[in-house]
Image 1 (spheres, one colour):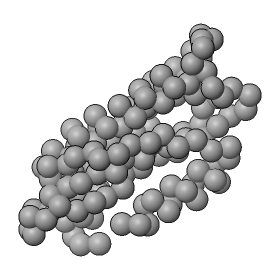
Image 2 (spheres, one colour):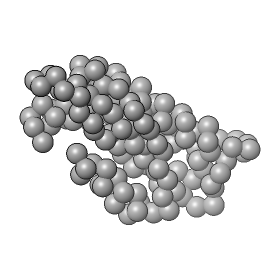
Image 3 (tube, rainbow, N blue to C red):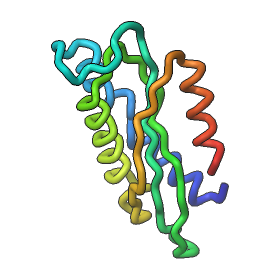
Image 4 (tube, helix red, strand yellow):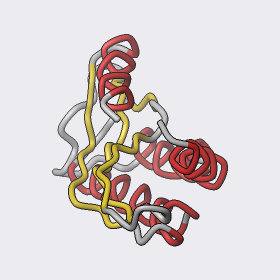
Length: 132
């Protein structure tokens, strides 16, 4: 990875403070009143949000593709509405970050990935982070 990518990645991670930003959504998922949108609730699940983004590199001026993943969170109930809230929040944080705003970041795809164990989530997250 080149220095500007490493710097942009560090700036993004420093600015996101994802644990705090997503905590309110984690709490919503865990304690939300019952509704028709709940799709999983029996046992704890682990999730992260994956953003596929395009950024313009300052030196080359070329568009580069990157994966940005939120940290892995545990949740007991995750409905469709909450999944979209989590993806919206992650996207807003990325676009407001230095990597998103200074490098003309554009989200091209987003996904909320759900797993039965932390280990599964971590292995999958690692694949996306190492693709870059």
